[in-house]
Structures are given as C-alpha cells and as structure tokens.
Length: 518
Image (tube, rainbow, N blue to C red):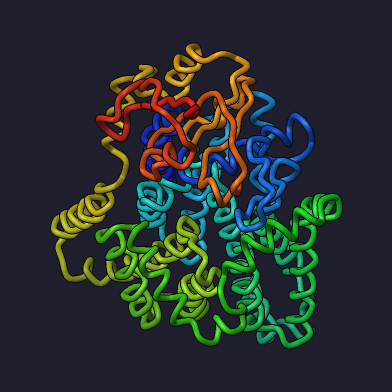
C-alpha cells in the first residue's frame, strides 16, 4: 500500500509539472501579473516591493504611489519571489515559481488531509490527483499572484487544527479511562501555535487569511477541553498569527500613506457592507460568488464540487465506520470554507481563492467515497468491484479534462522555444526594433519584459483612471490582447506603426506597436 501511495502522489505531482511548466515558461503576462511580478524583483534589488512603471497619483486607481511602495496587498508573494530573482533570470516565468511550488505542496497537503481524516492511501492519492488536474489549481499554480501561497498556508493551518482536534479527543478518552486519575496537560499548544503562524503567513499573502482565522477559531471553540483551554488556544493562535504577518509591519510603519491609499481602498472599501453584516446576511455574497464559481470551474467541475460537498456531507455524517470527529469536523470545515470565503470576500471579485473550498470539498468527497466503496465492495464480486472502481475514476478524470489547458500544453510542447509561441523570445525580437531610450507604454502582456530591458516604461491601462486628464507623451505604445480588447490605442491618441506576431490563436504571441499621434 505504501508503494501505491507513492505512485498516486508521484503521478499527481508529475502530471502537474508536465502539464503546467510549458504554460509557465511560454505565456506572456496574464491576469494581474503586471501588479504581482515586479514587486518581488524590486524587493530583491532595492529592499522595497513596488511597481516602478505605475507612478500614478490617483487614489481611485487603487495603486496611488505604487512606484514608491506596493501596499495594495501584503507583501507575502514578493518575499517569496525575491530569492528566485536572485538565482534565475528575471521575467514572468521566474515570478511564477513560488506559485508553482505552492501548488505542488497543495497537492501533498490534500493527500495529508485525506489521510488525517481516515482515508486510505489509494483514496488519498486519487483526491490529490483530482486537485492536481482541477481548474482552480491550474490557474493558481501558473500565475504570479498570491492565491496559491495563501491557499497553501490556509490548508496547512487547517491541517494543524485538525490534528489538535484529534489529539484533544484522544486526551479526553484517556482522562475518562480508569488508568488515568489526573487531568492531562494541554499538550496541543505547539500545534496551535504552528497553525497560527501558518494563518499569519496566509494573511501576509492576502487579507483572506481571515477566513482561516475564523475557521480555526470555530474549530478550537468546539474542541473538547473546557473554556480555559479554549481561551489559551485562542491566545496562542493569535500570537502565532501576529508573528506570521509581522514582516509586513515595517512597511506599514515606513509607508503609512501608501497603506491607507492602496490597501484600504482596494480591500476594505471594495468588500461591501461590514464583515459582521455579511456573516449574518450572506445571501448577496453567496449569489455574487456563485457566478464567480461558475466562471472558474465551468459546468462540469462545478458539478463535481457540488456533488462532493452535498453527498459527501450526507455519507460522512451518517457513517458509523468513521469516528465522531470525522463525522462532524470534516463537513464543518468544508462548509465553513465555502461560507467564510464568500462572506469574507463580500462583493470583492476574487476568483482563484475558491481553490481552498474546492480542496476541502474533494477531501470530503474522498472520505465519502471510501465509505461508499466499502458498501459496494460487499455487494459485488472482486472483479466487478475493480471494474466499477476503474470506471468511476475514469469518469471523474474526464470531468477534469475540458478547460484543463491541454490544448495550450500541446501547442507549447510541439513549438518549444519557438518565438511565435514563447513570449520572452518574442518580445526580445520586438524590442530589438525599438530604440533603447524610447519611452514605452505597454499593457500587461509585456510591460514587465520591457521594464527589464532598461527602457523607460509605463503601464498602459485605463487612461483617466490611472493618469487623469494630463497630456501623455510617449514614443511607443505596445498593445496585445488586453489593450486591443479595451481599445486603449484610441484613449492614448495612438497611430498604428507596425504589428508583430499573430493573433490566430490564444497561444500565439502578438503585439501591435503604435506611435503617438502628432
């Protein structure tokens, strides 16, 4: 069985690497990477996470003074990226490495959670494979955003708290046995403190770390041990969380204006009504995030998510094979992940952070699958049972294929390092046609590459939102998918100069180069 465990886990990790590395190395900048790729580079070079090509002074852009210090979100991702920029060539692929490693670790933690809740090695391995091939981990693992790191630390926090719950039950049973007459000490504080640090690390990546804090506080509240132990665990957890998020505190002290202008505007003001109001009346948040979930998962994986959550809860809760902690603790964590993610985010347009709730639903579904397998095993012959297992696994994996990035993977693998499909090579060829002292505006696809080339660089975005009504001077305007769809050439009074590449498919590299209209 250990051999089977290693095979399942190795297959899941290997598949993720094989299927995602071509996307990481070949794609141009994608969702929000113009915000989150460069701060790790400047942190390594200068000691401050910032976006030098966004010298905006407009509060409503959410990035006022981002060229001084980026405070729109905490600097956890930048801190994780900095060592990679010290070793590897700067660019979008290097900025994505922390997300890749966090996604790999999430696959392992999924396996660990299933095992902790009593699932056997094969069930745990299959759950890790499902998570590895899912759309939430696909996008979180290939994008230079804080999602993957935040989710990983949240899962590690939950794993420690679940361990505490099991330890507390074991202690309680020992106390009630005739062999023990004295109360046992609260020996779970170390796990609680580690959980708190993980929660702090998650908050250091994104404010949705509050989801893991509230979920942990709830589980600690209902763990056996009495009020004093609960209070002690809460205090230890809080101290650990403060330690985890403490690397952000010096930047808040040094850049208080940027903190107020960016973080408060971007996070607190966009969430909608207060957190307590959203917790007590979650309907608007749930409706808002149901649309986001559909966009993220698609119809097939959303169906898988719902079945695992609902049927998993019924099967696990009614099971007599599972221990009492499993029957209440696992559904509680899964549903709390859904409820708290939606209400904590409010009307904020988060998307990839739903990977946290998705992992919990798969863990719940895996434990329920183990229960269902035992029922089916008793009713079928060994050969029929194995055939049923095989058909079920194939059916689930088929649900994961649509929208799984296989088409992009095939294109990149069959055109490896071809400048038509490799963004880094492509933009290097384009820049060879542009003077080194030319002031360039660019959308997210290539703005980081142009900045790294040493040319004066500005981000091309909504003109009035970021730059106001002031006249804008530039030598070249480079627009790809985002700029074309938003028609920014018209906003920037640009005249088309030349086109590079092709837009025949989403995998092709292309950019339109404009000059300023005189």
